[in-house]
Length: 397
Image (tube, rainbow, N blue to C red):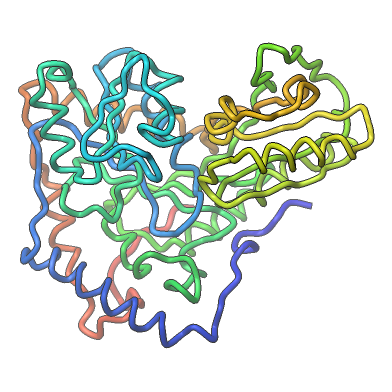
């Protein structure tokens, strides 16, 4: 049976006082941006931000990769990330010899997949955009994808895409540390496009309508639904052999260091003889002792058996020493691909391509009537609550 929306949400109600303090601080910051005390910069280049308002995975990297795949054949694309847990500092542009520790696992993954796109990291996103557009090496950049930048309000993107995990809808979640929200649910009002990610493939039209009602969006906001489609397994190491995908997989050691491994467990059920999970924290940097633990766990499993890991984990495992020959031969990567539901792929693609084409014609980002309407609708409710009150919203049926 498929999981229902919100089923991964666990709230720590006893931490509510801390949540109030956190919410007040974040609320003041957003108010300063909304009132122009803190400034958001616009740039004369199309910028698409992809992010969320929750801690943990909502599919940012696969959706950023979808955008790169869509755009890179027509435009020179640059991706800008902060490079979480990287070992370098300041601005760093990925090159052919760049290693994962220099830029972080997710930027490295995108750099490996799209070598013709510029991939840069900088904690100061405004400085990063200035470097991408101003440096001779990257001055031909035509569009920038900002990775995980929904809260980085010092940049005003031309398109703001908010990702919402189907299994952890923000409308049912709470602020940190009670829940996983980084800011109030009202933050979704800043989005131009909202995508409910990781939807079950068999979701019904009624299920879609329930989600549309729950998200309660403004008329200027577009709502999409995506699911993750698993691609054929690939051996991580050259010692590995191509895997026959027909029929049931053997016993699986599921190795992951990501924020939300639950969805992988759901997707793998029924596809293998048995699953042995081995989960680490998000962005976990694997060590020699971890390698020994993996070796031991795999040795204990009934054979035949294989190890399956994520693409993000693969960037941190490929140079890990001390993995046994047996493990290296049995270790496979599970690529995933974003699929739009309700035949909405063409509508989404046209929205993205039209925005970039229109705003690269004369090198400036146009201010549209929709932008003015959006600004008018962004006034906070008088009671400063999470309730939308009587403000007009749109529900699709």
